[in-house]
Length: 291
Image 1: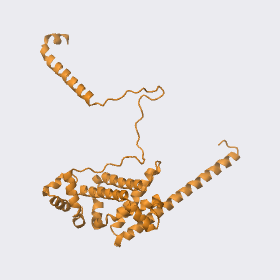
Image 2: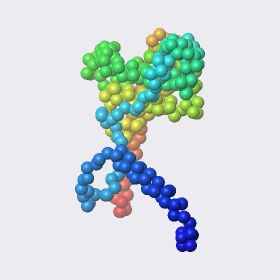
Image 3: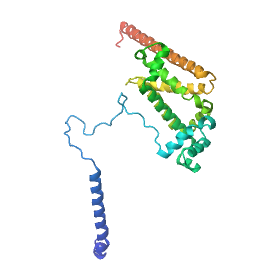
Image 4: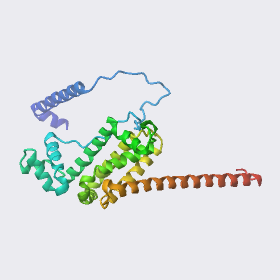
């Protein structure tokens, strides 16, 4: 190796080495310029040098789940296409007609990578926005309270949840006849993750807007329960011939009552098991067992 180093010309190594040094300096300078300045803080000796990773939790200030983002052109096409959904369903025809109404060429539907499923997602996200707007405007809870003969401040969290869930179902009334096809597309393997994400976002919005501020394990169970009730009510809605979805509303009421009865039974079983366990421990101690 020493012989090779002496015999090979130095100009073979020099340019590449110099170039590497300049490149390294440039990268280091750019990295330092793009890195925000941080204030050095003293770490106590009794604290770990590397802090534990941050774990998110729910609170009233917790950020909402991000909505599906679309460009201005995509939003214009999808918004116009919604007007054709009651007639043509969530289909390529509705997208094409929406592109024409928005002033785009038919080929512009290729701007939507998921095609008809993007139209379904846009419908779901836009209805959630409308539901949130009705609550923030205040008219929805006032109407629910008037139907129950109460003041708006007398409504409980569960009453608000029921009202929000039914209001969201009524928003599907104009697309009720084509919603089964939408459910079929949402159940496709490739579409299930986004469908479940949207369902979770709806359940989280309903509970948050109703004033639910639980921060314990029930944060998950309550959202799971609302998601299950809403998903099953959507299937009933597609076969509901009554005006204003009266059968669907009755179904939702029964599901809430069943859920409450099931929770009471589980609580009763737990109390019974706890009483039996404490009795067994007391009996064992009376026999001299060290327990």
